[in-house]
Length: 232
Image (tube, rainbow, N blue to C red; front, top):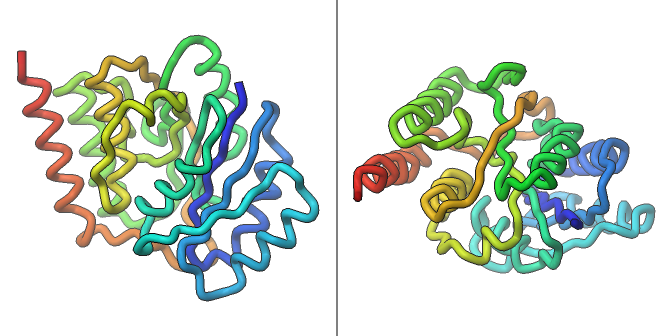
């Protein structure tokens, strides 16, 4: 099975080359990289074009809709023509070696494999304390109350079979898209598991995630999942 790695990138000139190089150095399966330029105003796009001259498995697409993580992912989804895909952040926060272990879980029969910072063996280094508390709370309570088979459902670092994407209706407009996709996959009966991963807060550039701006969308999905689990 081939894997598509989708990298949404908005003004990531300080990180994109290192992120791609890290992937190219660590991955063991057959894969392609899809970089989605999300309305960057720096040299991100030009850097990717230069990198494409070194690596033949990289393509560049543009988010032609309004800027933002969800629309950038949608643009990447449209370019996927492999059996598997995984979103990877452009800021070096995700551990590329975890992808090899995720791939093994897919081969073992799972449909979605979640990179978990909060299970045994996982680790989260840095980042705002409020964001950490919020993601821990959402993950743990949905695990215990709803039965979601991961304690870190908010993490975007998940590997999916393409058929999962083809069978869910995505409504999200922001970072909550990762929560929505996993929840809907769960309620459709797809097999989900998690493996430990390490997440490191970005050292260069500015995060695009706003806790206060995104909280209402997360809370809406959180409550939807709880009520959905109560239905017969």
